[in-house]
Amino acid sequence: MKTILIPTDFSNNAYCALYYAAKLFQDQKIKFIIYHSFEDQVTNLTSRIDIGKTEAVVEELYETYESKCNEVKHKIVLDTENPNHTYEVIATSLSLSRATNKLIEKENAFYVVMGSKGATEMASVFMGSNTLSLISSIKKAALLIIPKELDYKPIDVLGFATGFKRSYTKKELAPLMYIAALNKASVKVLHIHKEERLTDAQQANFEHLLELLEEYTVESNWLSEDIDNYEAISSHLTEENVDMLAMIYYKHNAIVRFFREATVKNIAKYTQSPFLVLPKRD
Image (cartoon, rainbow, N blue to C red; front, side, top):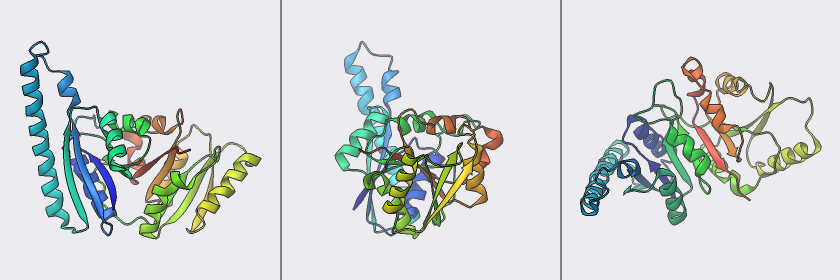
């Protein structure tokens, strides 16, 4: 049985991400952990000097948010009626990033699934601050980001965007391969390049990638664009009906900037596909 973490701020976006995950893994034995971080409210407590009062307020927050998490649990159980799935709930005063990493370690979680933005984010922002924070802080589980209120549909084509600049391991590609296997999906390798040819190192990494994906139907697409022009990927996702996009997160790479630059005028191009962030594994 795999464990999947579902952070929630009780927004509709968060619930849609949970529902998407429940449908994506509907035929698998899964333990979902629904959790909420109220760290910001603890930080903003005004009665810092009165320790007793502060502790009482924190205890009340635990009870309040655990109850709200239970409401989410009851709703998803009613909406899906899936005997393959079990649910646990947690309210925590830890920061979202810290709580997530602790749960990943404790529960050996395979995925973290969340909505692209929460209830308080402006309409012009595609990804919320919590999502961007988790992209850079999660180390040992894949982060699956579900665009706002995206309806579930089976994954037929799973895109993997990469520059072939580093070698790959089976462990870091495992979350991608698991979803591809569940859906019998093909894998479309997307490479944005400036040069006409791959370097010898890139070619070796590309061939190794094909070896790791030998059990899957793989198609390679070379997108000839400037590396800073993310229009290449977004347009390809739309034109080629890619159902999910995956990338490996390397420190200082372009993932966060990619989504920070998304604005209302081009957001429709990005919201068609869930986004799977794979942590770099040594």
